Image (cartoon, rainbow, N blue to C red; front, side, top):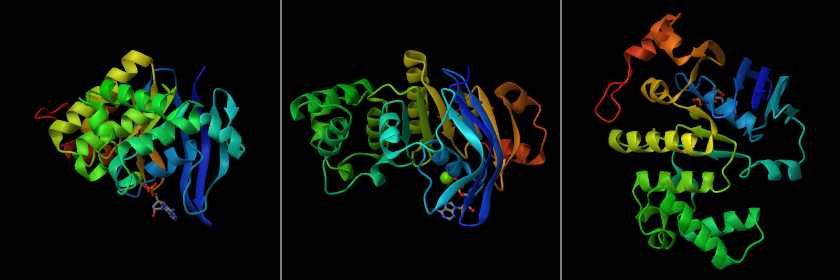
Length: 262
Ligand SMILES: Nc1ncnc2c1ncn2[C@@H]1O[C@H](COP(=O)(O)OP(=O)(O)O)[C@@H](O)[C@H]1O
Ligand SMILES: [Mg+2]
């Protein structure tokens, strides 16, 4: 049984059809990368999976099944049950999503307390534990910091720590390493892989970096102008790219941590 099944989905903003006939099936512990140039619809697809389409975006055809149940018409309460606990999202720059005037600890404690009825002290301790699991030394200090006091890589680890607090079955990551230098990129990518190995988390990783996709993903979906132009197992796709577009993306692969992965 697939954990997530996106079936023939169309997505529109207003009356502009933006994503056409998107299909994606993800098993437990599987990692799928969505690659494609800017504006191809990658963010739109994963936001639809989390029921968080911005700007009046709507799924206008097809269905999205999570554990065999459609998520298209969930109530706010039902989404609150799923989001954060079973399905989590990590953004490109977790720091930019954070309120600059509030410390990491304040945000993290509040996040935990929306999901769990525990004391502030216990929530703080849980936050510290998660930060340290993400290899952020001295979690207590990080909790007391403001986002701008941390490096981009540290902020991204904080974002991942938050996203992993409840060991979600499905993690959606939108360009999680794009704002980082290559060395930090490689570290964060490895961290995602460790999370998958440890918790069997399924992941959809959106990236315009086919090198990251090639390194992480079991399967790769290539999007262009709102359509899937190619999809398949990593090996096949990388070795036998069918479209010129995929080959161009492959040729543009930058190095990841000093190594070319494809
Ligand atoms: N909130 C929105 N309102 C209207 N159009 C949007 C909105 N978000 C994205 N779009 C449009 O949808 C298309 C796909 O965007 P997006 O999913 O962000 O692509 P990607 O993540 O691949 O860069 C683009 O043409 C973009 O302009
Ligand atoms: Mg995007």
